[in-house]
Length: 180
Image 1 (tube, rainbow, N blue to C red):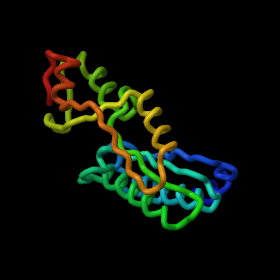
Image 2: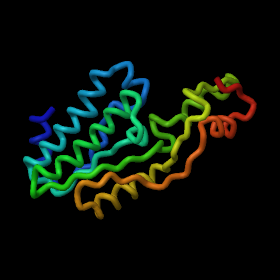
Image 3: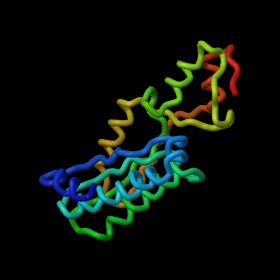
């Protein structure tokens, strides 16, 4: 809500914008909400920050924005483009984005799902060759803070992260389970 953000951002110096409709299935099932939250919501954050002369704004994106083929990745790519583009609108506020992968154990992580499914002997995957990039929550927070400190405006930060295929992860967590 742009009007509410205008009030919330008074006397604020830094914003880390992490609000999102997160996850491919949620965005595909709720495309209108995904656009409203991930695109229009981001635009509202950027605009309210500009009006309040906030110093710096970091928009949290996703590795799925890299080659966006589904709704979630597309909306996160739009949020990155908005963040970069807003740098030309104001001499006061600087904007950047941080694009990263899966935060281990977070609500969108596949780890809790696999742990829940493991006792059944069947793990469900979208595609067995899919690659996942991993971040511990502590490392993600440190990375965001470093980017916030270093940013000049217009950057899309992409960390080098350890990766695995989803199949390898499934085999490591439940070696005897069927992967479907």
